[in-house]
Image (cartoon, rainbow, N blue to C red; front, side, top):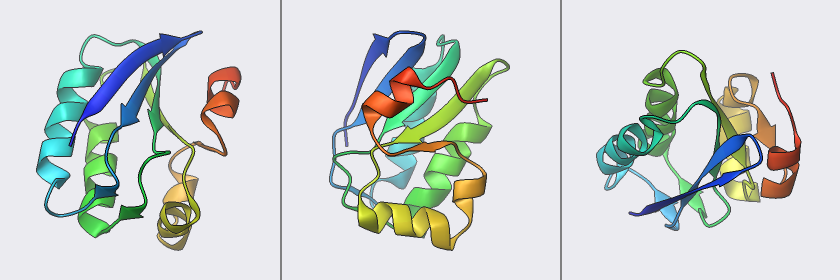
Length: 112
């Protein structure tokens, strides 16, 4: 499990460089997200374009990552493939997170 970070426009983009976020990596993911988001301000876009599979532990880790953000930080999701998108919609987490069809859409958006 590895995350990479860059700044684009007014957002910090965190890219998940893994095909799966599941029980085997959920705790590591949450710890990496906490460390990576520390010191960031404003919008944080989680680029899930490389992720093909997410289970309930992975979903919980993303929710926990959102909850551990500080004041003024906001987590948005981008580039979910069909399988990952389905998990967010079936669990109604699409009502919790702003979800963008692509990373470009997310960067150019000013979601509330």
